[in-house]
Image 1 (cartoon, rainbow, N blue to C red):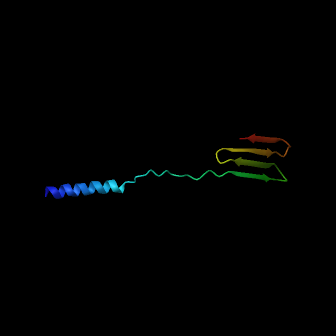
Image 2: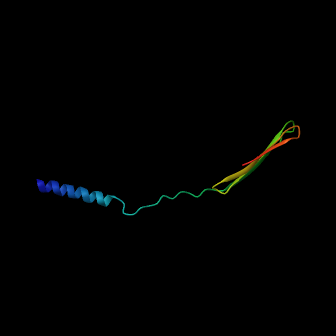
Image 3: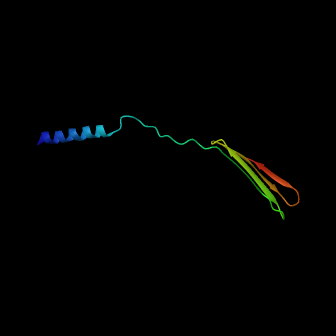
Amino acid sequence: MFLKVIAALVMIAVGAVLSSPDVYEPTYYPAPIPYYFDYNVYDAYGGSHRRTEHSDGYSSHGQYDVYYPGGSTASRKY
């Protein structure tokens, strides 16, 4: 009986060792995708606005402009 228990424990240990992966497999993540967009909204009765933005996949840069009916402009870069 004692030998059967030892044999069973040895088989479980061998199974556990064989079931674990031998090689570390790194996780691959997709590369960031660069993008660019630009749009304008024109309003004949009031203010208009425009926005541009571009990215290299890691950082974004852009500008937002608002054109008020009185002729003044507000512009922000980021």
